[in-house]
Image (cartoon, rainbow, N blue to C red; front, side):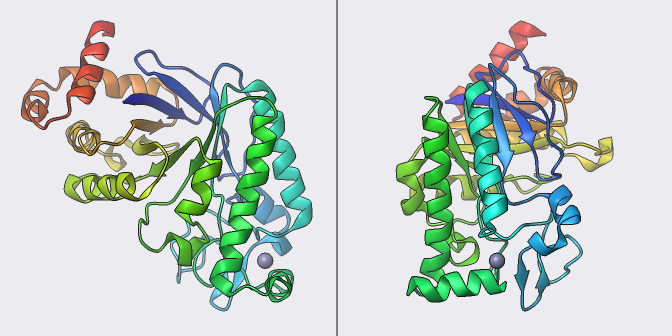
Length: 301
Ligand SMILES: [Zn+2]
């Protein structure tokens, strides 16, 4: 197993095997490509562009793909996938990052949800394709990932594809076909973000399901401390240790830990090695690799 950091700041944290910098998170705020780290790019989730170009936002019969749309669960605003101008821009952006970064991970690669996007351009492209609606959406997502891979592989870098935590309906909801994407992904990243992991069993079940269905290595992304969170809004150290140990025993290939910056993750590492009671409890979970990670952290702090 490999363990990685997943930060909104371009910093590395000791005690991890690889380091991901969120160069362009869904907030739409863009940083500078960072060398010697994986760079993460959210493709179609983009609050800044949604505000600047309201006509770029994906649409459905039940309203636009905006955070304000109560019929869906959007954590950010989402753009239409077939806008040629934005698509060309984001592919160039991915390539420019790939020149510098040690690898690229993409997030938000898909349609907003079921019902999206029915803008006149998408409907016309679907009609011309001769495919059914589900297959056309799959083709649109898969073609985007194939093109993105070409841009990244031009610079010889690893290419990781981020999914959403739905192991059953991703194809129908988002146009994400796991088998169609597998040839283009060096690995998949599945976020199971939550501000509480009180029921670790659910997250273990998700990790086990994804490991079963995905035909490339699987990394699970766990939420430690997001930007703007208050201490009472984030998972407890006990929850984080238990969910990590349970996910680690499912056979997945690695775990990433999301945090606002390096200090938030270091605070978690320190608290983790001090949580003797919890560590004793999880010692017999069958998560040797995760317990070895804790030993590594013990050597640092
Ligand atoms: Zn559209």
